[in-house]
Image 1 (cartoon, one colour):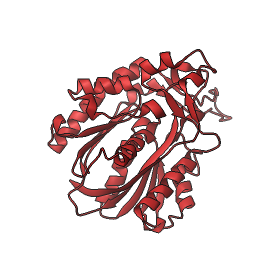
Image 2: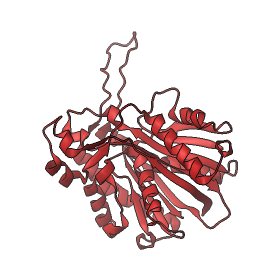
Image 3: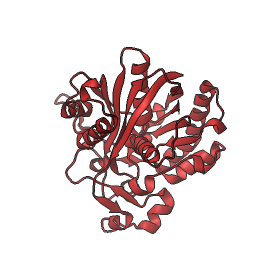
Image 4: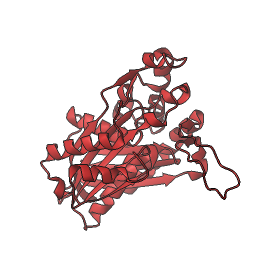
Length: 324
């Protein structure tokens, strides 16, 4: 076990709620079509906020909950595929906004696996012995990457942020095992944020295409096939069985996907809590938001074994198993 403690969790979502029926004013769709296919009724969408705004709100909540000063932090990491800009990176904006003057800061982009990959990086820093306290946030404003006329994609995504404070500890809690895998040969199944090639010396200039494009059936097959394999490898490293895990906190992509993963892995769906009904798919933010909700509701208790499960763009999968 890599001994570390989740000191506090927090989440933030925009005030604006967009229902499936509201989407019907923009395109040919409705709740009766969307919900049975996705498990989503609503999503939260920003008015004027950007990714750093949601992440900064989470950071301030975390510091307030924990009683830590921003100066206590050794690092600030933000996982996002929808940053404010390529530079400055979102984590640096957050670090500046909260006055974490002793912390280094950087972003990672592992799309919908971003929470697990970011947590892996943060836990590795603590396990190295060089750092004691860190802030990790998954934050997304995916609405700026969505073509709101494309019902195959726009019905899925929402905006939000979730995060946690981590500290090195001598207590018997922390990371038991992890498994991270990439499937780059199939990466074209999920695309977003393509840049134009404006090199004056290039023969052809590719068009700028910021929007999400997804091969839905391919992504479904990938997730339902590969996630159980990644889970099995992580459990084997931890010396645990699937039944030893109390809760599986999976990326909130689609209810049907999670239902199939639970079935393929031989576990009750009750062990796979969901919140995409209200928030949709918030990519790197989804698992952190779910974690905060469950802790707030008292559904996660000390001593439980939790599996954090990520999957999506890359393509990629990732699992971390924790004793909390």
